[in-house]
Image 1 (spheres, rainbow, N blue to C red):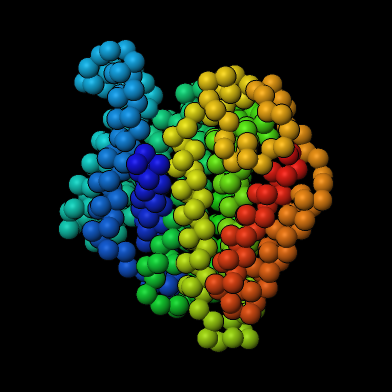
Image 2 (cartoon, rainbow, N blue to C red; image 1 turned 180 degrees about the vertical axis):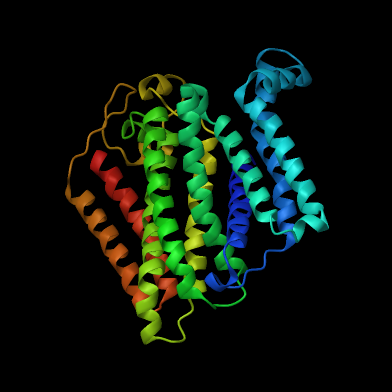
Length: 361
């Protein structure tokens, strides 16, 4: 339940961010987009409820461990813990946003997207304040986490809204002219902030693969590869394909890209509700290794081991297969075969995963 709520929370942020940003763009520079007003209102209302789920879980655990009432523990969390403080401000901000979205006069106001986007930005900052990096590294962690999530929300938010809520294919070239640079900047910020966050929370990246957290982090990183391949194809291959194939429908491909993006958000949601292993050896003293790791690892496992890459035939074959699938995805875009391209994207992740795991086995 907690993983589902976290994934839905990220989707709500993506929809709100993407919608409000697109409303700031002139109509002649994007396709026609219609996001139901009820959906925006539902996203604003859902944010505090979805972000409360981990607090509820934490309160239950602490109440049991310290033999205190749920209410007393909850009060302590809301007043003393970053996660609780952030939730209070998130609730206030979400209530304000929902109130504004509920006003008919505000919906049609020309300043509505700017005001709503500003409130959404504040909600993103409060989400960053509640994160692991902020609690460990203060302001530096807050800025890094917030920048990471903001960049993801901008990129995936616009992608998601355009692919699922656009009503036509008009002004597609004009849309790509500004969205491609925005997406590139967002990807760069996401990667840089993500690497910085990883240095905060998971300094022993390869060794963390022994743990469930590290396994999910690896899967998330591998999912980014087909996402980038789809983004590259949609951003830079469209014009060439459209010239040779007038019936080419870019929205189908954007929907596929957005589905991969949802998988990345789902993995992020799982990671957000697990404690990052700052020291893998110490974490293994209290947590069992990942069953995925133990089923593949051929050596004698102990918490003291340090994983190292060793190229072998199994590893090379899997990585070669992953590279072949990645090239195949790009080729399928050229011949407008969506389903084979999507399958190849998933297989890129699968083969890449086994290639890396066999390298440390």
